[in-house]
Amino acid sequence: MTLTQSQLDQLFEQMRRDAPYETCGMIGGRDGRALKIYPIKNVAENRVKNYFMDGVEQIRAMQDMDDNSYDILAIYHSHPVTRAYPSATDVRDAYDADLQEPRYPGTVYIIMSLMNPDAPEAHGYLLEGETITETPLEIISD
Image 1: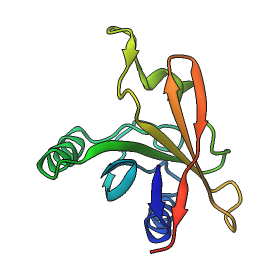
Image 2: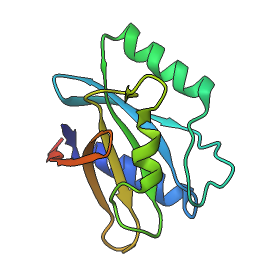
Image 3: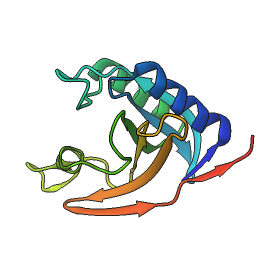
Image 4: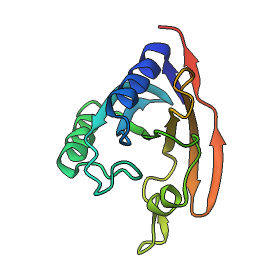
């Protein structure tokens, strides 16, 4: 998946602004190239340790992606004080136990970390059941 440096900076800015709470959103685009970032309000009960996207905002984002013929390239969220790696909750929530399949097959899960505030991190993962596969994020200049 490819992001511009300014798109990555936008994600980091949102993460810093929302800290100490987890931030979240979606990224739409085509052919693995991010074209639009959709910040979505975190409405989880415990926003310090979890994220749950506001349903109305998530539907609006998905409708906009559909209107623009974008794919859902990524779902992103932050870990304000822990490393940028999927938690057990992240893995569980990416899988629909009733349907026995990933909620968003082929979608990259970007996890960001402010564990070191001077050097924020972002990593991409494919989450397929219990399998976690890191996938590269290509950052290009604007």
